[in-house]
Length: 313
Image 1: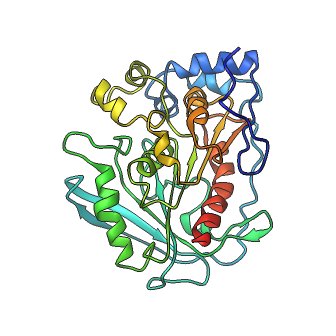
Image 2: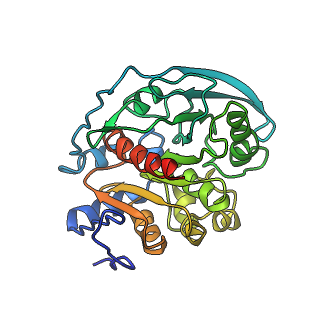
């Protein structure tokens, strides 16, 4: 039986639900070897095996009814010196707001194979900001998404998507009144973007008021990462420098929410992360796998978590 997490605190600040069964462990062993990021994009074999897990994908559909007409969305491009080419972006506003309004900001990081146009699953970014979660509308906040490429949101030779975020996208948004003090910024992501959100908060904790990671793509070793996606890290040293588990202590002052499905190939990595996160982190292990149904179901509670902390400052 796998070891239990470092601590289990059954309250709403840390919901850590662990269920070890032979079926889920077997699913992890099979799926982890191939890497879900590539499996679900049909780059490597294995998607059929994941789809065959009995009941693994039974995730109830969330209520995505907006409480008010969604706000506007603006899309465009800017030249990124950090990425050395133009990148696309989308800025979404909450109901009743428009460009020029000063608002807290959520930076949304897309997954592998996705971009600013389809980073949010199951709805548009503006629709997501118009949701009612737990019976209450989300507090007003804006969302920005920019193209980070396939490089797992950390520096690669000739391409630095993390610097694009910190040195270009955040100033770009602040010039528009978004995430500009006294308003705050949160970061959120799915899969590769979930890993990138944690990494951004670890590397720049002073910039990030809270982080929400949905199914973060966390490998437990460099050989495992290289076997699944040889381009994710340039070397073992690169993996060590950007391992979200190793550097989790940097999140001591940053509220964290992470969610993962039992049948997700990244479950072992998130379990390792849970053991070293600050004691008040929220880690939600639930039924589901690495797919859109799980991602979409986790978006509303993740946004509510960020909104609560953005409004608190």
